[in-house]
Length: 205
Image 1 (cartoon, one colour):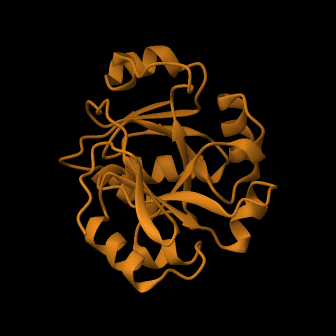
Image 2 (cartoon, rainbow, N blue to C red; image 1 turned 180 degrees about the vertical axis):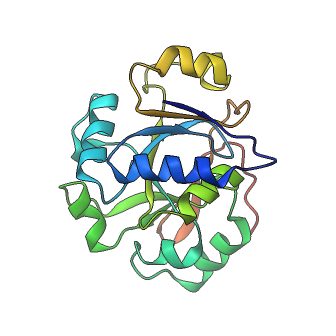
């Protein structure tokens, strides 16, 4: 299923169609404020299994991050956040950052693992924000490409995304040309914030 959405004039009916599919356990390709990503609902066993199959990984080994619509939702899935780190998050989110934080106990249960750290994002993209606001859980997000692959043009061009992934993904949400630059990864699990991958985001203290 392909769903085209104009990011300048978002059709709420199409958002509800996407939400319906995610609630059923579908996986979807969606735009973010960096690269296009493939997602499923965190609380969907079926969705997580499909995402793991797509990435050819066990659920417990998935390299992924969680997408949230606001800080209150993010805080529900993390261990208590120190004031300086919370201020850093507030200064940079929504935006093209993935903050590695200590997860709450419930997160590991979804992945059938003892996962204690995970990437957390509040993306600054109107389409994904509308989707997130209409769901009862965060989205699990991972990249379209495999680690050993380069990011190619078809990961940003909507037509090429459809041609390459239409037989592998339940729903493809096309919202304009994406970027070919990842988010900036900031590890906040060791006290100080450490940039482990410089991407699109320029960290503001």
